[in-house]
Image (cartoon, rainbow, N blue to C red; front, side):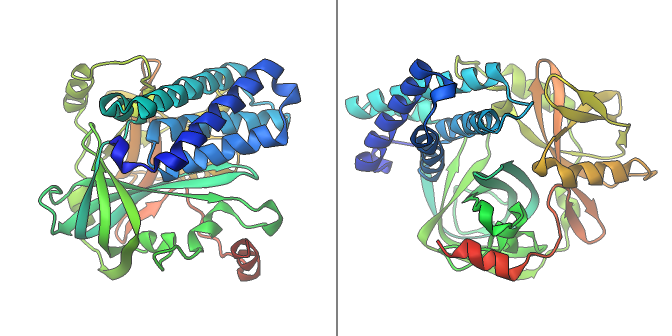
Length: 373
């Protein structure tokens, strides 16, 4: 992302307020953290994500999570994790502010970790999987993993991997589960849940930013339009099995940097003929993991504790009794030399079953409360 692609009048004060909020928090300590400081961090996270500042947005998301855990006196609050991501957020925000002030395009793009967006007139996509993150009483976020079926853009090949992210502030008094927010109408007159109906999705007048990993970030504009198409049936073309040697080559060719995180090297994979064992409690990470075996490789199938891990835990537990589990679509990253897996979907005869998304009905009356801002 170049400096000319952002709104300087909005971004400059946002970065300044964020830096000051972090400094105040570090100077006064967590016990005296004011509501306004917490609100500044939350708003900064949402704005950074909306502006496409991926590295700053993801860093603030984790810092906000830990701050929420602290204020609620939850046992899984991690001092080390909070301090790391809060200091990282300050470094990135100050660096972006300096680059913005000096007009340094290359440094701004490096710190924002967001490549320039290319306009796309029309494309058709399908959704393979959805990840979910919930910070109680604060926000819920969803990442939709898409594949391009057709496009009029010369920059997007057929089969191109895309991610579309959607973030919703939570209204605690409404009593709506995270999945309920997927039913809310967007500015472009569609609902996020439309991506999960097993149909082709036609998108017009959008933008795509290709990351170094080769994955593209889909951005919807005010003028973008989204509509559902026919039922998609050829899911088998997207279930090619994982190639360990290709993954090793990608890791060896990656130039490490001081701001890199393990999660930033994640990749989408599909496993066939995999096996699963009973979960193991991980007291240090406050989560439990399912050992998932594929050939001679053992993955850590991570299930977070809390609301965002309930459906995934249920699905994986159900797989314990299945003799031949269906192909599984997941995200893989490398954490402390361990192969860490985030399962997203399994492919049955009718297409993907989204493993961490509840299919429970949403109360229309409660949803109406959410829409009344």
